[in-house]
Image 1 (tube, rainbow, N blue to C red):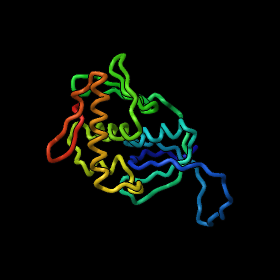
Image 2: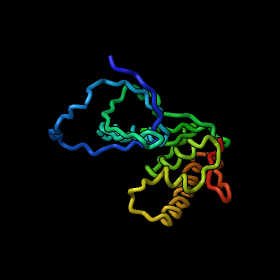
Image 3: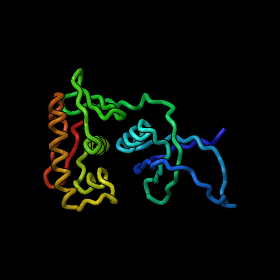
Image 4: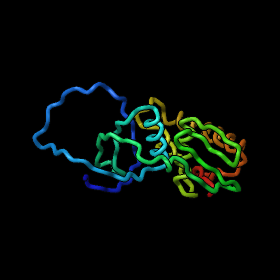
Length: 187
């Protein structure tokens, strides 16, 4: 049986699956089986579930400090964690990370991928204000061909869209603007 570890990840990116090519085996390489419990951010968890649902199982994971990354093959063992419940403002909502939906009772709304990443980043702040630059870095990757000014504008547009969607299910008071800082989820 393999070694078991727990780790916390913030940057998880699926890799497009390509046909395998033979690579030379390093004499320093060690083969082992590792069972790991990955405590990923809500945004990373959502990306993992979407990618697995889309048929991708190979990922690159990076440690929080950015010092280490690895290519791994993931399989789904338990999907019970695909839904999370939150008390947001005056509403109790259920977020289905695998389907990109938020529900308040019988009312349900779908979120775009960017809206879901933004919502996950806000929920990850645990009710504390998150500065705009921090939200931008969590929602858009560095390799996107988008300027910083465009990201600032896009953040405002996506916040407006996310608020409208949450208002449509009765959770309109769930997000707040913190003047001079950024945004926060009202938990």
